[in-house]
Amino acid sequence: MAQQIVEKEILEILEKNRQKCAVCQKCSLGKSRTKSVFSGGIPNHKLMLIGEAPGYWEDQKGEPFVGKAGILLDKIFASVGLSRQNDVYICNTLKCRPPDNRNPLPEEKAACREYLDVQVGLLKPKIILLCGNIAVQSFLEGSRGITRVRGQWFDGPYGSKMMPIFHPSYLLRNDTREKGGPKWLMWQDIQEIKRVYDSLS
Ligand code: URA
Image (cartoon, rainbow, N blue to C red; front, side, top):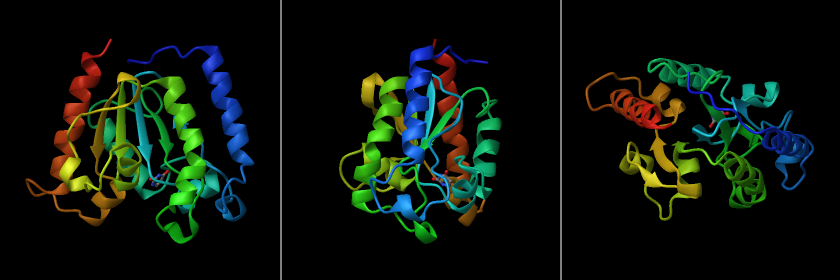
């Protein structure tokens, strides 16, 4: 287990931001959400996953990745011995659910960025996984689609290594296990992520 101790001050600031986010009205999603979804998993300095936005179940429960996509995400991590309980801090680009799960609007992403910047800036994770196109667009310049950039390491904030990976919802829609297919590619990517994860102190 590679859990690292996160300083009390950092946990306190994260908690303050969670509370601020819970009553946030910086964009119109503040009116339509049930619960904001600040983070899940374990705060740590090693591994962070950034997804898109809460869906129906996340909005109900206030936890990220608890629907079908989340179950698959947990399985992907478990396949290399990682878990959200012990190893991964999970958050989203948007903290509130867009109605009908539509794509986030630019003004929603801009309003919510403050929270993501706090999370990344405080934890300064050594590895950041950009899960799906929306997260990729928030950190990589240009309009390169996920299929072109997945599995590659990029320089991220605070000296981190950043890798775009397929979103589990995409894998659920493209269920083939064929060599070269999305699931097969994800399997390559998670093994590479684990290799680098293990090499970190
Ligand atoms: N999809 C995401 O990107 N995030 C969640 O929390 C749930 C589904």
